[in-house]
Image (tube, rainbow, N blue to C red; front, side, top):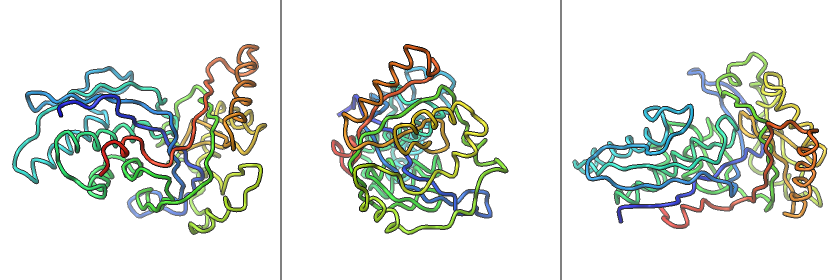
Length: 304
């Protein structure tokens, strides 16, 4: 096998996100629940005859050398060399971006995770899931979750993961046409950093009590900062909030709302599209639906 095509790199939603403290090294301590959804970037991997690692598609605003997929591939390549004494072949990586940058959907981290999983298979490197998660963590705190590959309750900086069950759901997601730099949120003086810690049973019990609505657990502590700095995020929360418990994912900018059925999500999107045609929602906004995933689709194909 020298190629893997159409490898999915799915988005995630943070069903809640609490900042519970700050470490001495400046990293924030978090509690969150990660949910995979079926909207994804896709990547193609083709082994080369030399040892070069190249991105063969352009990504506007992301230089090749700084791209997480290139950094992840080189990190794994060096790990294989360390373990075996032989450098694995290079690879051409094509990426087909669908997920917005600066949207809080984890696109870059998911792309890097898919790269590690795919090349682990192509190179027959034999790293376990835990080993890949540890390898990816220095590149990004969300990368271990995507390799973990299932709905998770997360703590620490986001790397301490436990599987958790939540109701199956459909989501309507609004991209409000802005990119939110993560650093601008976490360095803000307005960020709450002392939300009381919860336990996983608090989160699970909340969903066990749900009836006809899908009211979300907790809140996103980053939302108050993002809406203050980026008014379109606040406007999207207000618009989608007319249909349910709307909130921002991650550090923003995307806003989502959960529904029991695809029909409910379609009705909200129908309203969104009608208002877009009448220019009562900004032309820079994009709206779409996605279904919750219970496991990473690539992990089903090449299990670790």
